Image (tube, rainbow, N blue to C red; front, side):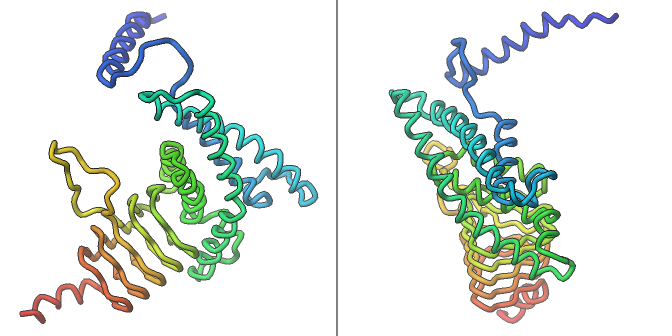
Length: 303
């Protein structure tokens, strides 16, 4: 049998961890886990999806007469688990301040309570996304097919949940939910992005939507669309400034076709159509159609 000197590797790995903790000014004291668990959040969001759509995303053996029992049991377990994860995030985020344990517990409980109360509204909002996908895709045969099969809809379920956590000042939990969807669907939506009702991402792979993007109602995106930042301002010490509005505003009824890249705090006016593979860094007036041909023609017209 081969011998791998595992003990030496374990000691070396401990040394690397200690170096990192010293660099980050983290405590070396023994104790319980400090951070939320990606695995726990994956289980929570799976349960929440089942509670929101029990007969389609719930267990295969579920019957209509058992819906309320299943939803109640599943939701209670998911919220209790979420409470624990929220406590971990809040405890870590306040580690450099003198915040009493009972205050953290109260904040976590209030956040999860508000999250639970928001679920019926989130379900109604998600219904508009499902209908938008069904009505916007001629290949869709039913709303059930859309919910079960479309990656854009799955990404939006995660985003609607994650955005609520983001609003409740649980950004790490929100980001984990968003990245679980990113890994599953190839769609990257920051939980801070504000997205109106009836949002449809067709195909979806490669879509990127930044933190401060604001998207209106009945907007449709295709694959490989980027709503990104054009530049990243820094402070006097050269550090990136966080939280500044730096992503596009997309008004109601805009359609953005595959491969389009829209950068910076630009505004796409209501009813605008953005063609495939265009690069936009300026405002687009309402009702305007922008294509590669129109962008190439503009400089000659201006001359």
